[in-house]
Length: 99
Image (cartoon, rainbow, N blue to C red; front, side, top):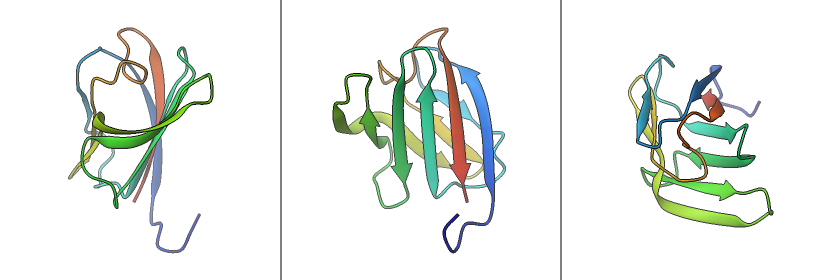
């Protein structure tokens, strides 16, 4: 962990295909990583990025900076937008939030 990281929390949830709020983190994250286990997609959001954005990598290795339907920080967690690779209905995704 880098300097300044206070807490790290992990979790998992099933996608809905619509924006999904994860409010069990207990802090406003400075960084969020999301891994779609079924779709094999990974995204990273950091506090230097705009809300609803993320750097996304898909199975084929394509890296895209998404500017909507990504991650938006909340005071007690984050919202994962309706990105069609990350938040797929009934697909399991794992997340890591860094304070």
